[in-house]
Length: 517
Image (cartoon, rainbow, N blue to C red; front, top):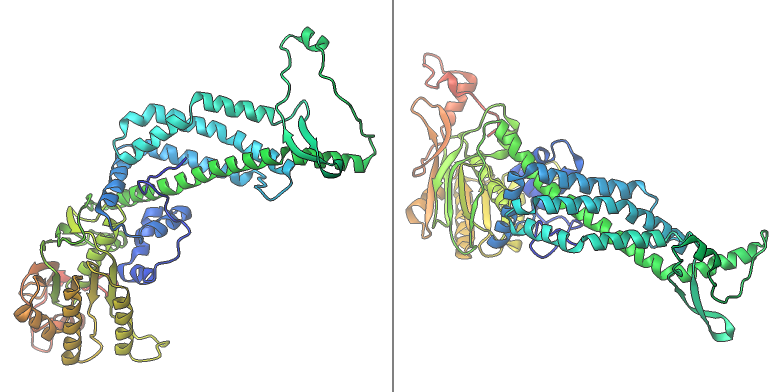
């Protein structure tokens, strides 16, 4: 039995190795904040979220398959949580049992596997009851296949057969084993036999003619004889014990996989509930083929920031269909880095089959998601900041494929304007020629203006909005790059106006730390 709720025809690799840039993505996009919201305080759900979310689906059909399952989870949350509770109960039953698996003696394996399967039988019955009652209400291919599998494989006859076999394997009337003489007249080909059926009538049972046999009784204190008898019994039940242990492992594996896959969807429901409680919109994104250049969104916001703030962050709108490059410039602390993070998180969530923090979101699938953000000074660096930036850029290029998404936040700002702009322009042009979609936040005016005046690829230019009084709205508007980032506004907000100068900055604008924007 397989759940197949994350993929249409395969299991998720829960023992996967970390992606080469997974730690960087978590740091740059603040994904751990998303994981905590998905977990709602449950360490197991946090682990599930951190395993599934970074593994991007590159096939739009695979994304839509997962979105359909998620849609059913939203529409029938109580039923899904009931299924999850059954899987948790099954895992707890296995954890609390003294299950020997395939490593102990045949007798121990048989008895522990029998008791474990016996404990699983009522839970399998609950699954069957839910499938019978809820199947018609679910619409996604994933859940419809799941319920059909439960109904087909857990039939009443099958459950009755399991119960009968478990009863026989208690060997209340002893163990019936056949053997043949082998080399040196030693026993060989030991086979466990089904016990002789006894007459139902008690009188007939008492006077029934028994099959001819030779009886040998071991003395009470004959330890060697008792040990030899145990070895004979072990040889006879060995194959049955292993088969039953494999069945127990199969059922245990099914419940563990079901718990993990449903745990991911419960994490999405927890995230959705958290954002809804904060008054933030979420939507099911529309995904397009990798080779297309679809990008359109309304009220897109930074989910990680929304989860950390007491008030809703500002959302942004954009129409970038057909664009290969998005360049973001404008006022300092105007929301540029926040916007870039919102783009990255939305792409990650979409390609995990999840909801996105926006009123509407549409994008093409990326072959990979890569970030190159500026770093603060690090005492452990072996070289300068510029060398460190070039080293990270080289590593990214080694892993880039066509139709990847590259997010750059003030890259190469550690060198001078001319040198940083020249290097940045060469990298941007090279990536665009290799069909890599780019979202670029930069303070390098030479770079931004050169792309605006002489760009050869379809580009959308956005600028952080600044009102005449210096107030930041944290919204991005479509506009050409300006030569100033209005750093004097921030100076006046922090240190006040110069002598004799009125403060042109509205007190309501406030100052946000870099941790927020």
